[in-house]
Length: 108
Image 1 (cartoon, rainbow, N blue to C red):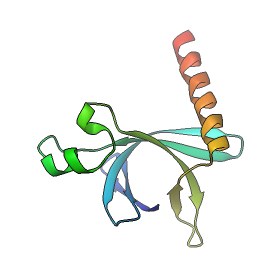
Image 2 (image 1 turned 45 degrees about the vertical axis):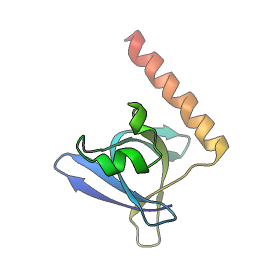
Image 3 (image 1 turned 90 degrees about the vertical axis):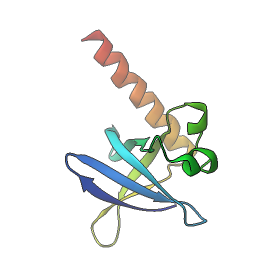
Image 4 (image 1 turned 90 degrees about the horizontal axis):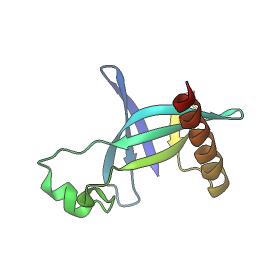
């Protein structure tokens, strides 16, 4: 998965590109720290009138499900942040950290 990021006003928009060259846009919702690593909770940005996207992306948005992914943030050779797919173990650790953050917020 190749990717890049750009700033859209106050939001960070991440462009994810699949193996076929299709681009998908995500807004960085939050950063979840796990040990020394950082992970981003990314929420898909979809145009309501973008009919082709709704039927072809396979992300589940056609079912009115929110398109949410977790990406590991790594620094590339140029010193820029890059968003990559986490391993299964990393994904599980991020889920646990996210659940702990949600529980903490509910108890405050």
